[in-house]
Length: 215
Image (tube, rainbow, N blue to C red):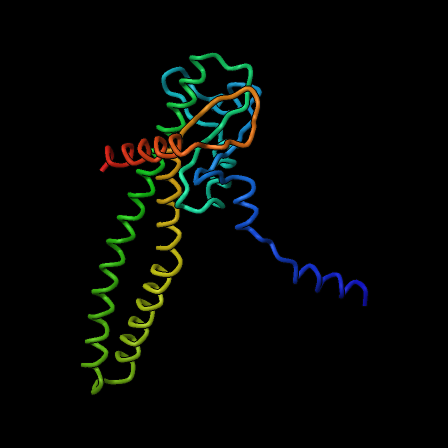
């Protein structure tokens, strides 16, 4: 009995995600993601060569997971806590992060365009199969069943795109767009940032400028 009661307690526990996100990340409308760095290659892949740098996959995963739990309306600031990086390394890290996620955004956009084309073709296919199904009322059972299966297959695929695949792609695009515009800062110690109204306005203006330059 005690084991079953514990299971029910676990099932009834609440996560309170919104309040935790506000507490851990958000200050005055800005989301700060802290990241401790002990070495340049915590961020930059060891496979990189100079002028062709890319990001460490563990760092990318950490950043994406952090960004995904933060609501989209908050601009992102990535704060590195470090005391070992040179100015050249800091510059390389900042540029590589922006270039990596700008490239990632382009890849997501290509996937979204490809799926949109498929979506349009499937819409036409569903309309055509519906017309054929209506016209086949006097036909034999076998061809009519084929049109029926085709109609429902296309309908099911369209629903999947609208509510599942399409939603995930749009979510990925938002995340990639936010990370492509992330603001990077470096500090020796991490203290929860208390942004002034002037700093918030400046950051929003910089994000808006970044986005408009890519339209």
